[in-house]
Image 1 (tube, helix red, strand yellow):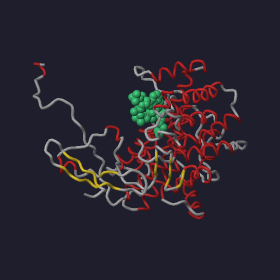
Image 2 (cartoon, protein in one colour):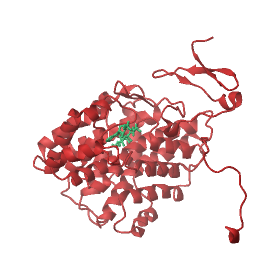
Image 3 (cartoon, rainbow, N blue to C red):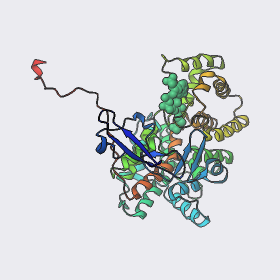
Image 4 (cartoon, rainbow, N blue to C red):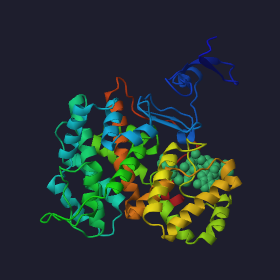
Length: 435
Ligand code: CMC
């Protein structure tokens, strides 16, 4: 019997089958159970896909126990220190870091694709003034499908590349427009002379309008560097809920812009990208340092649904390497600018108390990337409702990389899980009058 197999025996029938164990370049062996239904007439049950590999991928590797995160083999720490977000997006989407000419071409293309079709821009006028920016983002990203029909032959690598560049280029423009609409400020057009993060900050915060360019607005260098790091750390995270959603939608051959919109929708939830917003709302609810023990007690109480937002992770069980990097940026920024804000004092105290608490230590619940990103965004004056939108801008690089990998694969079966049915068995309909 080969060592690279796993035998599964049906104890009812005595029938035993050997399944191959697949070896990746890194990580756990993975049993290929695709023959199970045919061989043993049963399915696997794995709610939440906790131990199920849904695809083969070469993009991102995570070792949750050791706290390792690699994009295309490069440690996240090195990428955050040495690269721009645009370089990292190129890496994720193309497999290699760009050389100078490749980066120049890519960066230029992304800048030139940052404009929105004027009619699409007018969509924002149709949204209520108090619409959540994520609601606008999900709608407008999906609506790209109604405007950009050219280059839609997904069997053509050039068409795929153009679609991906469009999304990456337009994401900050749509995100900033969502914010400007929600505060009643005029839309700011993207500028070709600004880099990705600077352009986004200009569209968010300058006092420009279609007829007026604010000559005095300059982008704070520190702010754009912090944003660059945050975007790199959030760019990809292998088969997380939103990326899996993009893959699942894409597996049907659906329109690529609609697939990315599906990813935006999945990211919105507080258990995923919505956590950074939830962290700030939780801190506001806690209100003062003396109430922290009460909230920690609630988080530990089995009968209370309250959880400490920004703590815990499905994959990282010792530490989240992104949180380690971001924690330093967070502490630097707080030390620098908003020292006196009671909310920051509260956040640091909560971090310190939870890290000492037995419940959190035993269950390996450490602050995750979203605990710190929310606090940094707040320190950078980004409104709380925009936090998940910021995550979406960054994660679009990962969504696109996974979508590209999937649609260019030789075989990409439609994603179609099975279920364990617990409903009624076959029964007859009783006519309405007799029920
Ligand atoms: N506060 C209190 N208890 C918690 C928390 C928390 N934040 N997270 C997990 N637990 C407990 C949970 O009650 C469970 O206890 P028990 O074993 O007694 O039933 C145990 O820890 C394991 O939790 P789980 O829900 O089975 O773990 P999971 O891997 O399914 O969930 C998680 C991971 C991130 C959804 C969860 O930790 C959570 O809800 N955290 C708060 C939300 C959050 O910060 N999300 C952002 C994740 S990072 C960004 C991203 O990648 O999207």
